[in-house]
Image (cartoon, rainbow, N blue to C red; front, side, top):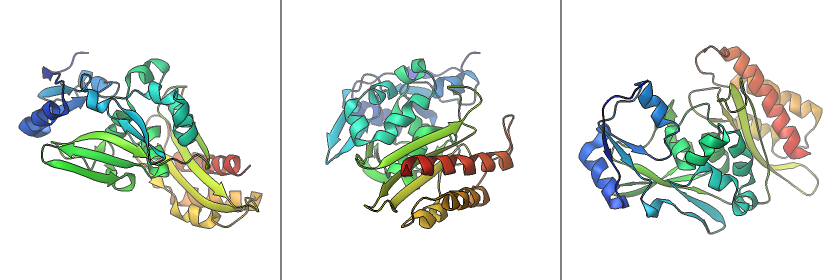
Length: 285
């Protein structure tokens, strides 16, 4: 397999990246780790006129703590985030999800921000961003804007990014006291999920659920929150009866994507219900 012909640019500043995106618009694609984009090129599912490689842009290589949360730049690798003690302390859900992303070799090259910008509906990190209430910082030659995770994912491989914009960083609020869990079913270790669930939960002194956020991935066109399940669990103690109802509502309300070689929509909804049950049970334990 060979990619279609393209021009290649490797600017050393963010201004240089933005200039190339402004000049080429929809004909340009940003290259970070390349773990998603390069296969698309080789299958000729993407045909950009120019690739803009951001590997030399120091402004995008930050992994910093600010106001108790994390700022992750566009060129920070998944492995760097996975092995960070500060990430594990502030955003344990992110640390738990990253080992499920591809294989070690993929995570050594792939980036957290790149995976979120790619918006594969079966990927773990978009769902984690949704659960944690992450904010996307987007930049073009004309300025910056911030997009909450709930407004960022529009469809399969489709986001709110404009053709001349780059996702420069993702900000994750710190959730050090929250209980978190992520579970998925995949054909093989390292494969994309047939269905998966990411969640966070806090409890009151009496053990009742105080705050809960849950998101499915691999089940629909975008990662999807479960507001009915979250409302049901809030203020309640986690009992077998509550877990049964959580699973039932998830099965009934999961918006499912198209059928593929691995599973049909009904199977994905059933799996999602069971995974939500297990995630809530684990977090409440």
